[in-house]
Amino acid sequence: MALDTAAPPKPRMSRRQRARLTRWAQYGVGILVVLFLVVKTDWAQFNAAFFRLDIVQRMWPSVITIGLKNTLIYTALAFIFGLALGLIIAMMKLSSIGPYRWFANAYVELFRGLPALVVLFMVAYGIPNAFPGFQFPGDIYGKVMVGLGLTAAAYMAETIRAGIQAVPKGQVEAARTLRMGYGRTIFSIVLPQAFRVVIPPLTNEIILLVKDSSLVYVLGVTFAQYELTKFSQDFLNRTVNPTPLIVGALCYLIITLPLSSLVRALEKRYAKAR
Amino acid sequence: MPTLPDTPGVPTAVELPAISIQGLSKSFGTNEVLKDISLDVATGEVVCVIGPSGSGKSTLLRCVNMLETPTSGTIHVGADEMTDPDVDIDRVRRRIGMVFQSFNLFPHLTVLQNLTIAQTKVLRRSKAEADKVARHNLERVGMTHKEDAFPAQLSGGQQQRVAIARSLSMDPELMLFDEPTSALDPELVGEVLAVMKSLANQGMTMMIVTHEMAFAREVADRVVFMDGGYVVEEGSPADVIGDPKESRTKSFLHRVLNPLVIEPDELTDEGVQDLR
Image 1 (tube, rainbow over the protein chains, first blue to last red):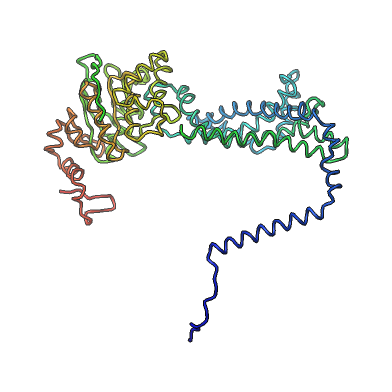
Image 2 (image 1 turned 30 degrees about the horizontal axis):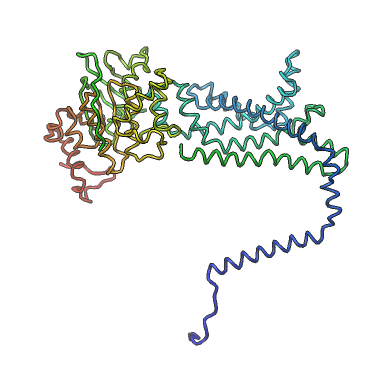
């Protein structure tokens, strides 16, 4: 076979050149799509649908003083309840006593498997029906705390259990040889270290709870008890315009975005002490 | 090398051995790790336990402060029987310090907090008093300059010295060392051994599981050779290390002291076949 050695070598791109070309091609396609949308959109119509300033003004400031405030309260109540119960369930899961472990496993499987809405319903309507005369302390607040907290506890128990198990066994042994008792070892040695491990997944739980708090509307709440979603929905019905939904969505981001940066700050702070 | 100020020896009840182990057996499932071990450690004595890995040395040490529960046999620490189910183990443990191969410092606490947490929470010492005791013990191990550091910022040798100081801060009458230098880089071994040597010179009762033959030969009052869950040979370092009687002791020491002596054709699936 005769090789045509006289022909000039085909100019071939290096791997890096090819990668750069591909990237610019991707940028180009992206820009074209955006340009197409910008040109084709009827901006007057778009703003009328999503950004009606007069509606925003009508929602202000109650979207903050009622919607945002209640979302935060419901989330915090459910989180505190869920964290405390989750911690107990996690300890039970790790217990050497069989019945404790069985109960904890059953609890997690049950409440992780049920929709949060169903649990909230059963707690808020079922318990007062089953126990006549029983009143949740703080009425709506007690119902939300337990109704959403029970589900949150199931998820958090699993997270906390993993965090506790991530602490080396030698830590417990060292504490025992220093004569620390079981409770002291857990609270002074194991949990502080476990906590550092579970900060990111626990933040996830909070963010999920923030969104689960939108279920509270099923409890038949008054205007003063509206959280963001119900609040926005209410305005949506009154104005027949989606602008309130945009405002509500932005408020959710006001809660969740700082949480993410808080996690980064905490992780940085704990980096050298682990 | 840190130089260590002298500390008066801890007053102890005489007569009784510091540790008395009688007929101790320990099984993990069907695996019998310790077989009928009897061993006394006198007050002020330094006993080094040597032997191949898997021989039960560490398990023996961990049984002494009940990190492992013996299957049968008794262990007395002073007058207290650790193996008695009614005895308050935490009370007896207070008199026993323990140093681990992996240091086990608390990573979320500073060096000083590592030394004070058990003092304040368990012994109920005031913060000022705990700090004072902690600084005194940091001085004994030459680590005062690092009291605000976190463990992760220290070298392995420094971490182990802090771990020793942490044990000392609980005023133990005897100290258990579980391969304290095995996890260290070779150049860091010396600083830890120096601290242990000075403790021995101060009259501390010590039971040390180690592979450092030179240390055992120089510092130990008695050397115990274990293999397969038995105490095979015990006696003065000069006898056990210098002039072993048992073939298993000879074989072990031969390998430890001459690691290059093993020929490739001696390798088996199990490791190295027994010499001699």
